[in-house]
Image 1 (cartoon, rainbow, N blue to C red):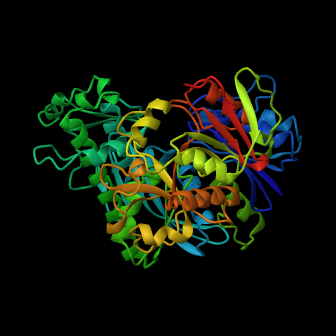
Image 2 (image 1 turned 135 degrees about the vertical axis):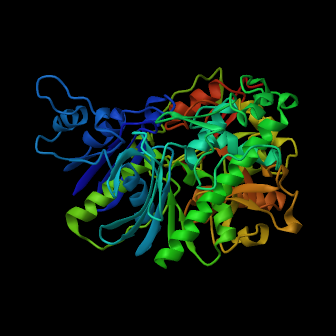
Image 3 (image 1 turned 30 degrees about the vertical axis):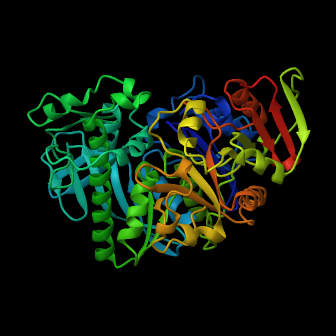
Length: 568
């Protein structure tokens, strides 16, 4: 049985499942080269033209995302899929957005039974009834108890009310017109001059801030946003109010200017402290929700997903706070990952199988991107056959090397198949690579390390490995300052552990760097330039070289080093 699930919203994506196993997952932006592209037609075509798809699952947040076509009146994706299989079955799951997040995390976790908690900006329009009141609004946080094959019980839901009815709160339901956790983060991101969904930039700024006793609280005691400070603009985002008695405090933060993004001398204390505060308040609220739900259910296996699930500072905080819990942080926690959850949920419902297929790796891109046939302008490039030892020495000598191999990674993290690599030992490395990539000065970089050295370098709080780069972790005392280019201002590092079984080529390269330098950690960032999607094909990789000061591209599958002759 082959199931294709599509998500047409931002982070537009498609997942093809065969007999419960992922054949491929890809986000539309990787194929179209348009950041946050929706309507995954190219991703769907990748499945439909190469496989006989039996079931098409429609995801997203609203039926309105699927307009009907002329003549037949079918939804757009139904009409498209029918061109390839006239008998294809359509399953509409456009009103179960949070369930897609939760199912993705649960089925990827390998747990038999778990709490699956979704912390999201805005899901599908949902409804709940308490007493005589029927509430309608957008999903914001939802918690489920899930078990095999497809048992789902909703035990908690938070809704942003669109009807303006009186707020309602109890242990299983929170309904109100105030913003919730992720939307508060979006409001701060917007205030700081980023997009609503560019929360990663706010997270990068947060460690530069500190507690400001004069700054108004972002949340009230009920756990919802302070209406004197936060103004909802659902479903798009939320805003910081500067016109209220409390909100006027933020006027000094220079909210309209973005010049500090490139110039650290222009950033205000309010901007830094606000980023710090939204990080502190939101991770504490999620932690409180986890604690309460674990206490109520007695379940100690916990899955975290939804857009906030990508917050690697919060993920580390949960591990430190809850050492007695088994927590799985879903690595494709954003909206793109819902197609994996929906496809798997449909497969388990259709088959009632209890066989588990936990996530093994994130190298889930389509095989069609593995095309190493390319032509190079010999006046611009030269090609040499080489080996990992030579490339490791090149990196150690402070050369940026782009790294391309195998299938692309699912989700937003580069994990050694679509990476830009540099030495972890250069004190000026962060500033240097940020300039080359066109990123903001305050944004940190990650590291990839030999897994066997993990516990020697980091305070793990029981974490055995971190192959998906989901935690910003503290160094052990004797390792502080040893890898300055990937150490953030707060002394943490977002780290990926690598084993030969997970990625043999990448492991070998890191090991050669270790032999040459005595340091088992490489600087690793995503293979893209600011504002662009990660590269998918070799042609995308060469385009990035053409438009940057990156001089080297290494293709370890064919032991080939491409070097720009005219690079600066």
